[in-house]
Image (cartoon, rainbow, N blue to C red; front, side, top):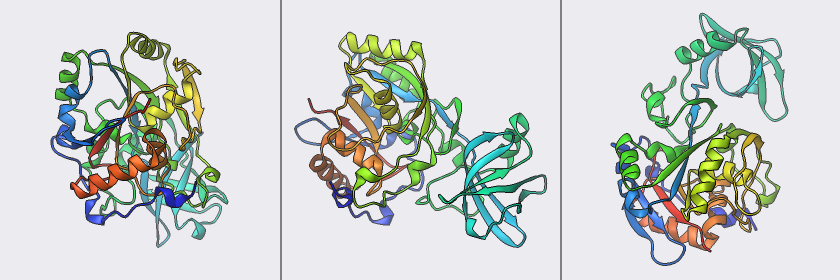
Amino acid sequence: MRIEDFDYDLPRERIAQYPSEPRDAARLLLIPADGLFADKRIAELPLLLRRGDLLVFNDTKVIPARLYGRRGEAKVEATLIRDEGGGVWRAFVKGAKRLRMGDLVSFAPDFSARVLEKRLEGDVSLDFGVEGEAFREALAHHGAMPLPPYLSRPEGGDPRDKTLYQTIFARAEGAVAAPTAGLHFTPRLLSALEARGILSATVTLHVGPGTFLPVRVADPREHPMHAEEGSISAAAASRINRARQAGGRIVAVGTTSLRLLESAAAEDGEIEPFAGETRLFILPGYRFRAIDMLLTNFHLPRSTLLMLVSALAGIDRIRAAYAHALAAGYRFYSYGDACLIERPR
């Protein structure tokens, strides 16, 4: 297995800069376990699933974790990645090499942080001197959504992204990237799914900064996965298990839901309550236990997420599906179109 197995060329103009309007108007490529691909729309999802199937949504909420500030005359851009308690946050900082221990970075006249520590991994610890509700209010006022780098925005961000880059399920604050498959869902679509007898459950996986990091090693198996915190309640686990026992298919909405379910699954596929971190890295050869289908967007070349969908459908099958999507004019990445992948038996 080599990193080149997960590469493809994507013209920049095919990267969606904003989502479809309405959200459920996005295109959907159906990738069955065998047979031909089919071009659909997200709004047709109720017709593509069966009564008793169960959709698993991730209810994490993205925090406005990107901050623009200055250290003296130098510009500083920081993306918060982990709350270390006591007002201290770990962050990725552009130009971190120029920062020194003790430097004060000002993000607003009433909002600044001091550099406590610099790490070899390239991240730093910033002490804001405030925590809890006061910190959340300051972040809501001064922070921008931590969009991936392929979305072009002016410095300071586009205020619309605070709504656009958030799913309608968002409840549990803590993510620094959106579970983008969930962005396609609207109240209208949820009502149509319910009317068809399609069930749902929610889990929580706080998407971390690792989702932005490319795989830089020749052998993907040597790539270190960042930990992400997640939870599955006893009630959600029971609901998922009951649906499976009744013959329903478990449909993960997004790779985040899939990874969490697989982290919590027993050998026979039963989902157990879960609370903690997962570093699960899914590569071709992985044996899926928890899910039957995956709804997901189109992923970056050489990314861990492209490796995950290749593990689910097969490398050649995904390569063919992406070639079809490119030829058919699909839009790619976070704000782009989606595909529905059926797990081969």
